[in-house]
Length: 135
Image 1 (cartoon, one colour):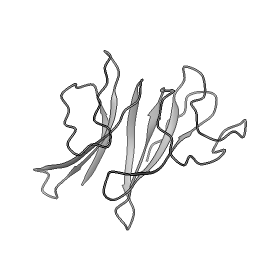
Image 2 (cartoon, one colour):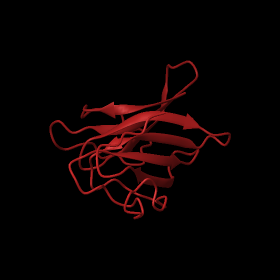
Image 3 (cartoon, helix red, strand yellow):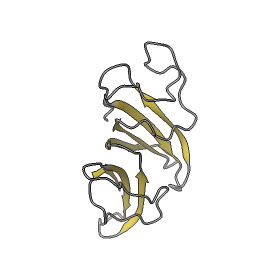
């Protein structure tokens, strides 16, 4: 069972995390993906997707190979893009490798491999105003 969301807690588990650094500043959140056993009694894996500013996981899915897909939103200029999808939903036609350049939220989409340790791709989704991706 996988769960995604966000936390403001400085002591949230980072077991086997791809990124172990939690938010430094007050009022900034970290997005997380947690894998639980089928009974919901053991935390098997905690993945963090940390940026300089707020980010929130809003939806999660698995494919037939147990790759994890997560969507959400961020107002971070430092979201870690990996193999970003070119020109996705950008009115300018530019690749989705950077934040919209304003104080607005951009949606994001990321694919994490089945081991939970490798980002296959991650990209911003959105235009000039607030954009939120959810599943």
